[in-house]
Structures are given as C-alpha cells and as structure tokens.
Image 1 (spheres, helix red, strand yellow):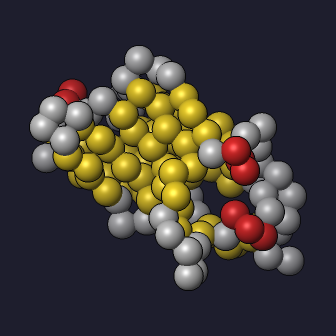
Image 2 (cartoon, helix red, strand yellow):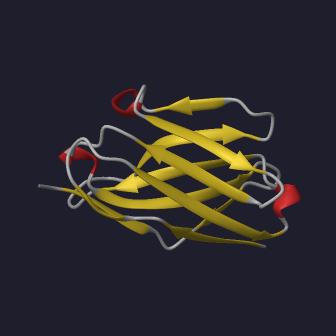
Image 3 (cartoon, one colour):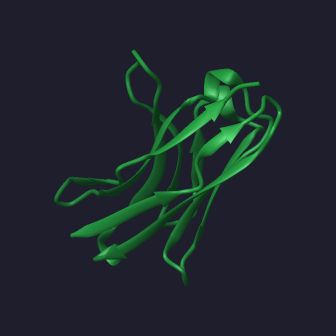
Length: 117
C-alpha cells in the first residue's frame, strides 16, 4: 500500500505561482511512476505531468514551459511547481503513484487550485 497526501493548493491571481507537494508513504519502492492529474468542474481528469523512477518526465502540452514536476527521494515527496498560472488551470489536483506489475494506481484526495482575479 502507498499513501499520498497533497498540499499547497489555494487561490492565486493569473500570472502567479504555486507549488504543490505530495507526501508519499508506505511501499514506495514498488512505484514505477508518479504524476499529477487534475480535474476541472465538468471535465474529465487529465494527466498534467509525470515522472518515472528513472527520472524521465512528460507534460500535457497546455502546461509545457510553465509547470515543472520534481521529486525528493529522501523526503519521499513529489512536487509540482506551477508558474504563469491561468484561469484554465483551475482544478482539483491529484497526486498519483503507479505500480506496473501488478498494475495498481494509488491516489491522493486532491488539493484545489483556483486561479482568479
């Protein structure tokens, strides 16, 4: 089992920045990939950014150049640095940990990010 707890969400003006954190605990050594997903009202959950155990990263096109995913292996924490935020970034952001064999997805409860003036 893996437990994930997100923090760092809040209200920010357009153009502002936030850093999300995801504290992981449990059988973290079994995890192959971690990522951030978001779900806006009335929309499907989408992958925002992910990082593999080898350090490879990928981003959805809409956040490339603005968001950066990183991890601290000592603190067992995943981060999402979000810069130049836009109103369309408003969503609940969920931390995800994925194990490939067997295939298991673990989810945090989410943290709300609101971008508004």
